[in-house]
Amino acid sequence: MEKGRQYYLDNLKVWLTVLVIFHHAGQAYGNGGDWAYTPGNPAEFLPWLGNFFSVNAGFFMGLYFLISGYFVPGSYDKNGGRVFVRKKLIRLGIPLLMMGALLSILSGRFELGHMWFVESLLVFCLFYALYRRCFPPVRSREQSPTFWGLLLIGLLMGIGSFFIRKVSPQDHWIWPFGIIPLPMEPAHYLQYVMMFVLGMLARRFGWLEKTGDGLGASSLALGLAFALGIYLRGDGAWSAFVWRWFGIYESLMCVFLCTGLLWLFRRFLNGTSPFREWCSAQSYGAYIFHMLLMLILQFATDTVWMGAFGKFMFIGLVTTLAAFSLTGLLRLIPAVRKVI
Image (cartoon, rainbow, N blue to C red):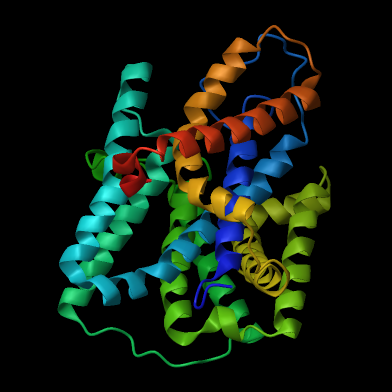
């Protein structure tokens, strides 16, 4: 392997991108919130997708922010503040402006859609650059994470999320103060901020590399158990318990499942190949382009009957292939390659 290259993070980002695409593919065929396309055939509906959405929303964007935060301190240390900010404005700001403008034109109103993640990541990076202008960096030192440390982080995140959801329930999106064009879901935003910060601290303290097999495997098992609890909640007492304490339940799932997945990929999926390197290079562009490609495909196949599950899998798979392929073609252009 290339010295110093964390291939497992590249592979994990590819997996997360595919999961995001399938998550969005399912929104038209389950109770996944507002979506620009509604199937013409009401039989194209999968009730269990609600649990799929719930589990995904509980961890996958938080894991995206953690991985993104992991690379921020090193990038700033290497480039310095001015170059760091310029690179972030190019890599995050240009796709945000272009895709935001396109979505706004197509919808007839100001719309960022899935690009809220890119905008939030840009804001977080700019705040980090401001922090580094005022304060010295956290001193690097190796330190092993512990189960009790993870539990404490999950509880702090969960208690905060629990009280936030008292005034802003899940799936409630706002613009701060009604004027700042930064759409956010308060119910999950504490998780995103904390996971981004945890990613930066993980880089300084070597937490990802120092996660032992015992902690990694037990975290994965516990995170999967929390996820399974959502799929099996039904309509009885267990469902009522989960929903009542969902901010805490979801946060614990997030912390342990993310820790377990990071360990799993580092331990068993830390290799590379020409195909995996190609997928990694296209994953950011695939995230940017997938929504428009998906909507085109959904409208084009509206009258084609595949069954509800068949349509969900078809849309997810074809959109994944199209988004990665389109990105690969566009990145043949040198100017585009510098951005995505």
